[in-house]
Length: 132
Image (cartoon, rainbow, N blue to C red):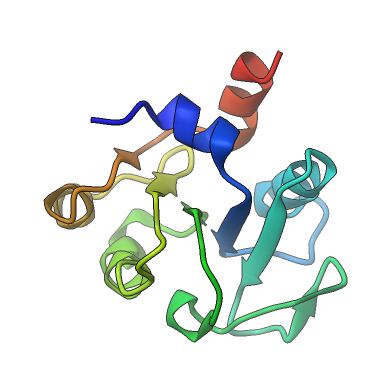
């Protein structure tokens, strides 16, 4: 299977599910960090039409462009429908569930699609470690 670290380093577009306008929320400052590192971030939050000066989508399925990584900041029990929606994007290279987010059923769906999945890990922390 492809190394998730290599996918992270070679990716360009990250959909952030659960993106928040609240600067105290990890999904906010991590999104801003990813943007500062040259990634195209696509915020996903049904409560907003714009975040970080970018168009915000209600769900992953509504995104009409290629996505390399779907980065999930939602409760573990909400992950399966997000993954099902994400797998419809044929350019998807990896699904990443943030700290304290894990769902074995969702992970199995991703693995069955032949796509790497990361659970219960922080994309920011990992990027900091490997992007040196």
